[in-house]
Image (cartoon, rainbow, N blue to C red):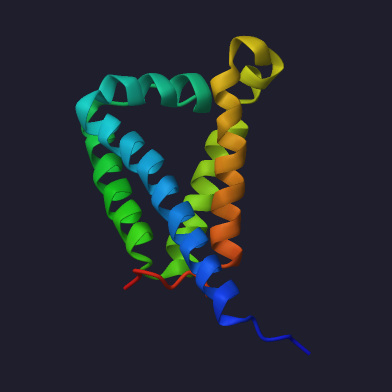
Length: 136
């Protein structure tokens, strides 16, 4: 039997989930804009971290457009099972593909910020039914 959550706790949970959703969105939308502003950077990331070479500006623009649709749907809370799930998987792949940076951790400290963000993505995914503040 599940114990009901008090309205105060429910309200605090909703605000917490909203803050997580907005902060994850900010990071993801900046990576999205990077595909439009500096498509060569995306090509270098694909090659270095994913072993995918030969990416063109057009590929970066198409991926950027698709990612923009995804992150806007994510921040709006549309189809949460799908959008939150894809964001969680995308960020997880990005986090795990950076494994070489963790080996030389003190020269790559910024890469460790990916782990709490991945945890935030996980929390949003498993608590998606509670994340209702300012969602569509």
